Length: 65
Image 1 (tube, rainbow, N blue to C red):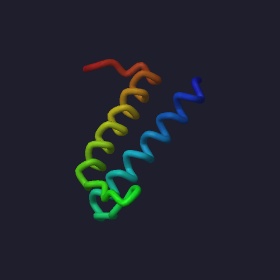
Image 2 (image 1 turned 90 degrees about the vertical axis):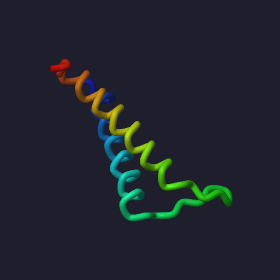
Image 3 (image 1 turned 45 degrees about the horizontal axis):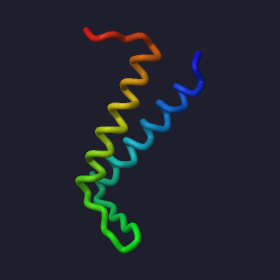
Image 4 (image 1 turned 30 degrees about the horizontal axis):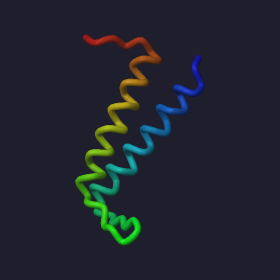
C-alpha cells in the first residue's frame, strides 16, 4: 500500500468537493481585495477531481476500458 497516494486522493477529492460546493452554493471568496470568480472554482473542481481519479486508477491498476 502507498499511504501518500491514499492521502493525496483524499485531499484532492475534498478539495474538488469544496470547490464544487462553492459553485453550487455561490459562496463568495475575496483574496486581497480581488473577488475570485465562480467559474474559477468550477475549473479547480474539475482539475482536482481529475487528478484524484487518475491517482485512484493508478493505485488500483484500473486501466482504460
